[in-house]
Length: 260
Image: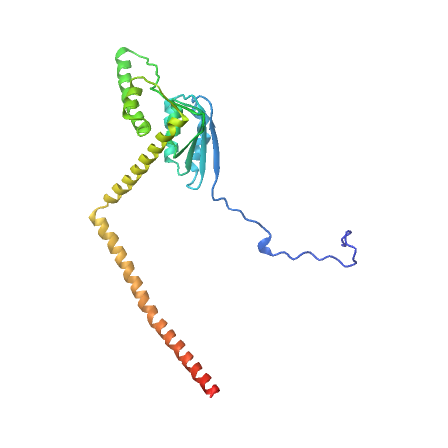
């Protein structure tokens, strides 16, 4: 058929297209996820999507948790903390308003913490209700105290001073502005980097002598193989070099004969 928009009488041929240019294949190497923690932390079902992304994201992915929350249940905050700490992704906490109580646990679990100018940070001790007979409530209270002591040491050590941690245990609320948080976060970052370096050194020191001998033996065998390969290639390279030199010499002699 003829093209109606063409003024010539010649039939139009289909354009020649390079098969390699027919499709554009895109490859996703990294992804950015945003989650907003703006309500009171009450129901774990509200954070299933976040935990699934934390579990499946890779080291090139970034997850930003925008926090403006007055806190909530400790058990949910600790579950989210575990998902954040074990995630391979770069998890960022963006503090954009209130960050109180259980929300501070989530924030301090992230690898990076961004502080906006007007955010507020508050740490305090736990609240709970006890049910049962006197001996049951007494044993439960003793257990919860031990549990909270372990949590506060793990989460806030390096961010709060030792004196502040003691005061929080006794019931004092710690209030911080964004300006007061920045030097504390820098100190916490340095402490975490030092802890990571010490862990790497400790893991290296855990290698026993037998394992070191096995590693050295494996490296020696690989070195022997490389030496043998080099010996195989050397004669061929020398032969090729000699042939090249002979050809160059013959060329020079021919050139001299022609000039004479």
